Every structure is written in C-alpha cells, then in structure tokens.
Length: 540
Image (cartoon, rainbow, N blue to C red; front, side, top):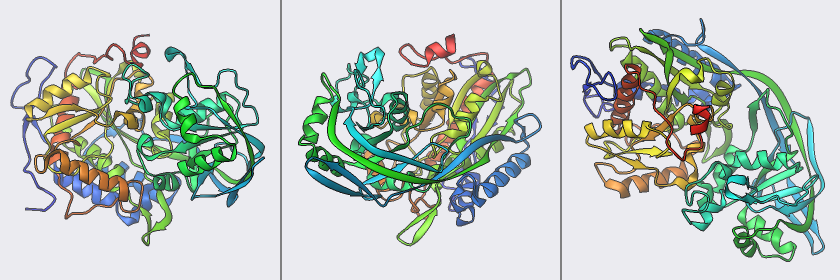
C-alpha cells in the first residue's frame, strides 16, 4: 500500500436534507492519496513558500487553476477562475535601534530582539518624532461591555502601548467580556485599528506568549520583511505599528518609575491611561509597490437553485522566503496551509463524482491570509456570490496529521447551527464534537471564515485536533506544542512522510463533504445562534 494511504477509501451515505435520508445508492469519499499528492507539490521548495507577489504565487495560482480545470469545475467568477485582489506591498526598514529617553536617562532597544515595527501607510518615509509613550491598557473601546481604555485621553502625536489579548482572558471571569474566550477586541488587527481611530502616531503591543498564543520568534518571522494590505483600504493609519517584548516593556515602565506588573493588574479594574514620561523618535524607510494577487475559484453549478451557494474556502499563501533558520530560508507551509488547500482540491475531485447538487458548491482558494486575511476580506467586500444567497462557509486551515481522531474540534463553537449539523455527522463516524480548548487564542478571528461571518454568512472552522485514537489527548498536545515551538510560521513546517498520518484527514474530509452535500440538497438555511455577534448582520 502507498504509505500515504493509511486508510482505505470509505463510502459514506449522504442525506438530501438535514432530516431526511437520501437514496442510499449515492456514496462519496475523500481520497488521502490525492490529499498527500497536493500537499507534497504545494509545500515543495519549487513554490518558494507561496508568498503573494512572488514567483511562488505565479506557480501556485497556475497549479490551482489547472487542477480545477482538470477536475471539471466550472469557472467561479463569470468565465474566469480568478478574482483579482489589488494589494499594496510595503517593505519597511527600521532604524537598527530605538532610543527611548526620559528623566531617568536613555534606553536602547534593538530591532528584532526587542521590537518589530512596520507601517501600513503607503509612504516612502514614516516616523515618530519625539513621540510620548502612553500606556492604554488593552487598547479597547467596547461600549457593550462598558469599557473604554481611551476615555479622556488625547493620543494625537503619541505612541500607545497596549496589552495583547483582551481583559477577559487575564481575569478569567466568564461574565467579564467572554472570559477566557477571546473577543475580536483581543486581536492585534483591532488594536491597530482602534489606535488609528484615536489618532495615535504609533501603537506597540506588548507580547506575552500565553495570551498571544505564540512565541516571540513568530512575531519576528511574521512581521518582518514585506507586508501586504488591500490597496483600497482607507482611513487614517498609525505611522508606526508593531510589537515589543515583555522584557522591553518592563524596562520602559522602570524608566518611568512605574511597575509593569502593577499597571497590568490595574488595567483590569477602573483603568486610567498612564503617560509614561518617556518618548522616542524612530524612522521607517518604506519600499511601496502596488500589484494584484489572485483568489482562485471554481464551482459545481446547482441543478435547481444555482444562485444558492455553499462555499468551501482555504488560503493558498504562506510566508515565502525569509531569514534562514537552521540554514533553511523557505517557509514551505505544509500544514499551514498546503494541507487545507489540498483538502479543498480533494473535496472538489470527489464531490464532482456524485449526482449534481440542487444548490451550487463553490471552492475558493484565497490569497494573503497570512497578511491579515486579505484575500477573504477582498471577497467579503466584493462578493462574487450574493451573501444573502450564501448558505454557509466551510473553512479549511491546517488539517491535523495525527492519524484517526475521536474528536471534531469546532473553533467558535456555539456560534451557529452548523455546529449541530457537524455534530450529527461526527456521531456517525464514532466521533464527538469538542469546543475549542484554547478559546483565549482567538482562532475564530485568525482565519478566513471570520470575513464570511462579518458579512453574515454562517461559517464553520473545524478539524480533529484534540484526542487521537492512538495516544489520546496527551499525544496530540505534545505534538501540537512541538509544532508551535519549532515549526509554526518557520521553515520547519515541511511535509514529513514518516510522521504524517492521514486517518484524521480522511475523517475530516468526509465530514465536511457530507455536510456540504447535505446543505446543497436541502432547503435549510443554518442560522446564527442567540448571543452571536453575527446574528443581527444576517437577519437585517
């Protein structure tokens, strides 16, 4: 047996609706050989880490387009398989050091080691000019929680320093924000946006590994080099934005005769912004380039209600070529997200073999997820298919390679009725649905399903990632910790035929396939649940 094929093809009966069984002669399966073949191809060095605006993008888009054609998918954007995504690339070169001056003297921080900064302004030079540092707690303005870290604060020309995550995570009270479950207020993107809305010149997030969900080395890799943003993004942007280490924050607070730990605690109760009495000047030289990246989209057109669509999505991009780590400079992104892109193609290849669905099924490979979910954000702002006719989004990002799994873990569990539909299918596989065990890391806001949710489309993001048949919870936990420590967003994220096990991928693929066809052959519209922040968007 081919070593990639660890499980034989399984035939699973489908349902025409959420309640009634379909003709049992209709069967479908996902092929692990196909999944493995695409992962090996897309994560090879030939694709140079699949970064937008590079030769890696050209090869990736060509490969995905040809695969969709050969599978037999129709073009998903009129007569084209492509949706243009205009982006601006900004490569910022910072001063090698940041000099922070105050009454107690001068502190020198080193670029990369102590801080990472860049800009989203499309200008050749951006800078901070004797900009005063102000500690703004978590940098959150949340009226529904009665919370405003900027109340009474004028930050024009100043640089705000803010905590990572949101107040609920640190306090751990389930009745405070959402407790350990991160809200959107905890995302770094929100903190930059809010600081800009407040008129700050700069914004720096204090990195701490546990509330951030990743170590400092990930910040160094992800926020260095060229950064992309949507070319049509508007509004004020801070001149300088980025991260500082916890150790750097402690030193800055000490310079101002304050204690970081003490003010971190105060940020949770009756917080008042704190001018730190220190300031900095810093210059960024920026190389700005406008270009167009591509979303790739194919579809199975429905037989009865083709205007209604179920959208499968996966991001094809990764981080490209960067600074060498252990002699390797290509960030291959085998797990993140060659695995999800491979699953997208494997699903299409299998689903085209079943009887034509009543509703249309769309397969959307989006660009620039690693740059801030930009490809899906562009789609959300310029949808090919009317969001009101979009039944659901099933997003695929980083499929587990632990082997057969007992669970199907749902990120953002409790948001929509898709959870319940997935749970019924998981039960037929002998699996259980498990809520995200790390809700404080905000994974619901960290992949492309979030942008579909933001325009009201019920979105699901799940995979078997909690309890393996072989080795249980502890083995998965150990392997995941090793991945986050050594390979996540690093050149070490490579395909390893000796250790990758495809049983869980087979289960996940069959679940996602059954769910999609179930929705495509029914008249059901999954709804957002009470308490979801996206419910009102769908219903208005």
